[in-house]
Length: 56
Image (cartoon, rainbow, N blue to C red; front, side, top):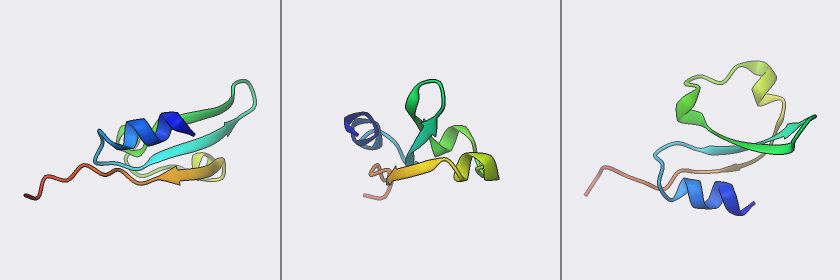
């Protein structure tokens, strides 16, 4: 779970950990996908919210 935590520190978007039949688990950045399709949503096992903010 360290990878999504590190990635979330530098992203405006949520980081999702997905089950993957070949790799075990993978992490994706929601910003790369826009609205997530159903098959991806069904594979989410953990989400880390992005912490960057452009509000000062």
